[in-house]
Image 1 (cartoon, rainbow, N blue to C red):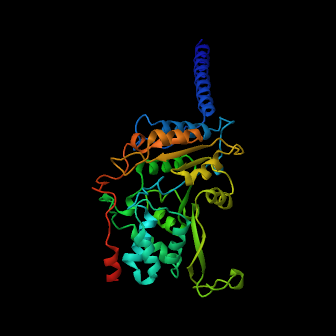
Image 2 (image 1 turned 60 degrees about the vertical axis):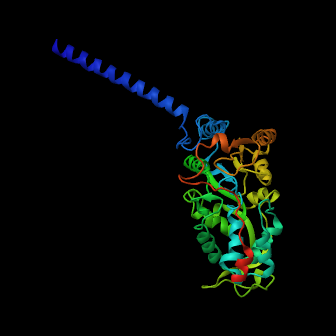
Image 3 (image 1 turned 90 degrees about the vertical axis):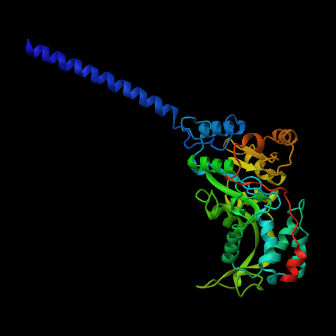
Length: 371
């Protein structure tokens, strides 16, 4: 009798264990079938109902889920490209980093190293100027003779100077907090981040290396405007095949210009240096549209999105763009517009506010005479 009761208890316990195992297996299968959810947080610096954020989060959750076979993107192919000036950072004059750095170099820090012609170019730059290839060629001339390390260090030191357009802002403080958060969110979800800038490459690397996104963008993931670099002592030789680098040699800027990384060059250099289409692209102006269109091209094997930042906040920033006009333009092109006014809950670090006026004229003539 006791043996029969003992066997019954053992059988009951076995049945209970089997039920538990079946339930656990069902839960595990359910979790695996759903796939991992997107990691990281996106929303600290964005408004609660931001439509662009919702679209990006939905996209990330969809393409990072292995169970979603139609849309899943392997990590090696999760390429996200960001323009820098106006997309990640403030580019309004007196805060456009590389332009103000050029002015500082020619008229304040190193007037002895540049020609009178370059000083005149620097002094003539006013709000509304065009950051075109002609101006970039003058930038290249200004830094002739500097080593790559010297320009990197100068760009880093310049970032510690105050901008006249904002109260309590150094040039290195001009990153938009919501966009920094977006870069971090994508990085944490397995995206490879590239900065594709119209600013010269070494300068861009220095800016990124001293920024809140420094942990998410490596130097080899920076593509910018290129100035000619040669081995010191061989600047006049037409071919780099005629000499070899040896221990202790230095690479210097010759003053020559190679290309301005805007418009068509953005898509061309993405292909040359990355070798595949991005699946996410972020910009803020017409000079970024080639990059956006390259990502959205119908031949992209993966689903892709493109976002455009609209500078429409005239209270916390110096934005002068009309939201209705720009958003309609971007939507018509297949881009998702981001409103600085309505989507950015916070733009800069605490204590940074616009100055009384955006542009404070400087007495360049006195600077030139003093130099």
